Length: 401
Ligand SMILES: [Zn+2]
Image (tube, rainbow, N blue to C red; front, side, top):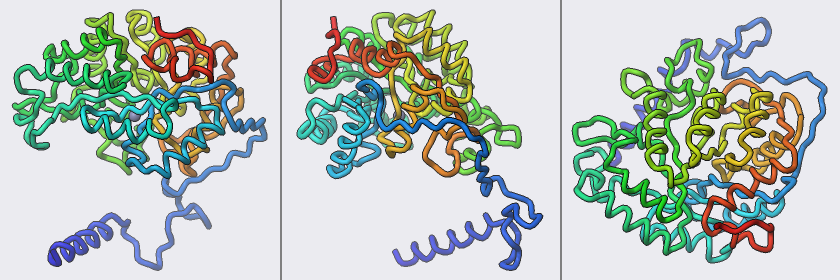
C-alpha cells in the first residue's frame, strides 16, 4: 500500500512537471500583462456594454424541471435535498423529475430519498440495467447480451411503474459506450431493444434519451474547434472519428427508433442533441409527432442564436419541456428564467467565472406568457404520468387522458 502511494506520488509529480510549460520560477506566467502573451485559460474579458440587466429571482409561472440528477449529484444527501427544495420554493419550481431511478431496490432507495419528505415535489424515471452482474470491461458478460434481456427489462419496468416510475431515461452510453461481445459499439436501433421501446408506449412511460453530444466534440481538437478550451481540459469528452461513429450516424439511429415506435413518447435530451442546427430539429419534430425536446445545459447554444431560438420555441411551443440537467447552483438556475423571459443582451449562461461550454455570452428570447406556461409545466403535465396529480393544488392543469 505504501509502495503504491509512493508510486502515485511519483507519477503525479512526473505528470505535473511534464504538463507545465517549459519555464522556471523566474519566468512569469503568460498573463497578458506588461506586454506578455496571454494563455486562453487566463483570458477573463469583462464586457464594457451598458445594457439592461434583469436579474430575475424566480420564474414567472410554476415550473417542472424534467431533467435532473438527484442521485448522481447529491449522492442521497438529505441536507442537500432540503436546501434544494428551499431553492425550488424561492424560484417557483413546483417539481423536479429525477432521471436516476434505476430499477428494483435501487429504485426503492431513490424513491425513499425523494418521496419520504417531499412526496409531491419529485418524479422519478427508471433506467435500463444493461450490465447487470456482468464485468464492466468484458461486454460478453453483460446482461444485455443474454437471451430475453428485453423481456426481462420490460418486467422490471412494469415493476418500476408499480413503484411509481413516470418514465425511462436512456444515457448517452447507448451509442457511445456500451459494447457488443466482439467489442463493437451497440447500435441504438439494434432490434433486440425494440420490445423495451414498445413496452414504454404500452405502459405510458415517456423515454428521455440522450444521444451523441455537442457537434464540436466529434471534431478534431485543434485551433478551429469552438470548444477547444473545454476539450483540452476534458479530452475524454472527445469522440474522434477513428474511434467512434459519427454524430449523424448516432442521431439517425435514434430517429429510426422514434419512427418505429410511434406510440411511445420520446424526449430528445439537450434539444435532441442538435442545438447547433435548430432547422434540422424542426424537421424532426415535424416528422415524428411522438418526439419532444428538452434543452438542459443548452441555453449556452440557444442563447447565442436568439432570433432562431425564439422562432423555434414559438413554433414548437407544445413540444418543448423545461429541463436543466441540475440540481445546479441558484445563480445558474436563475439564468434560465433570464434567458426565457427577458430580452437581456450578452450575459453569461453559467455561474462560472470562466465559460464552461464555449467562449461566448447569450441573449434572452423574451417568450410570451402562453408559451412560457406550456414550456414551464403544461406540456410536462400532459406527457408525464402522475405529474398532474402531484401538482394538483399548485397548478391547475388538465390531467392525463
Ligand atoms: Zn443529464
